[in-house]
Image (cartoon, rainbow, N blue to C red; front, side, top):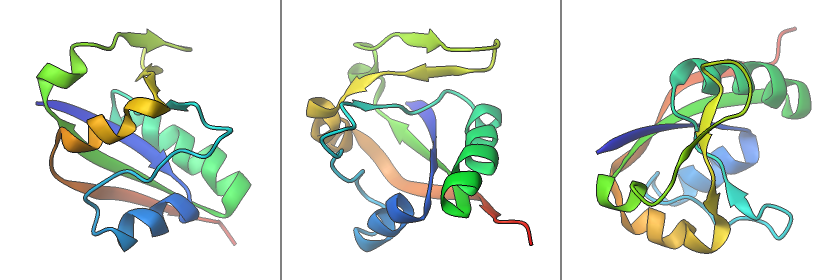
Length: 114
């Protein structure tokens, strides 16, 4: 299995909760790529800084995907050494969902600071 992390805001988290944390929701037309990241540190950085600033809340999710599916995708470094992620085309998201093992877990939350 490949362990993946994804930072989410409140809207995406609500969609995950509505489906029992079993599938990622479809991408919006302006979201042609699904970007899970390779490590908790990077996901927490995005959730705590970007998601909180934009939406007032951020969370980090963790999930497992079958290696056979993930072998098709390269890891891309988009910043410092720990800024690594996969670029999965939106049209393959249902196939990714079919290759999830277990549930998508929320492993950290970041509320807005008052």
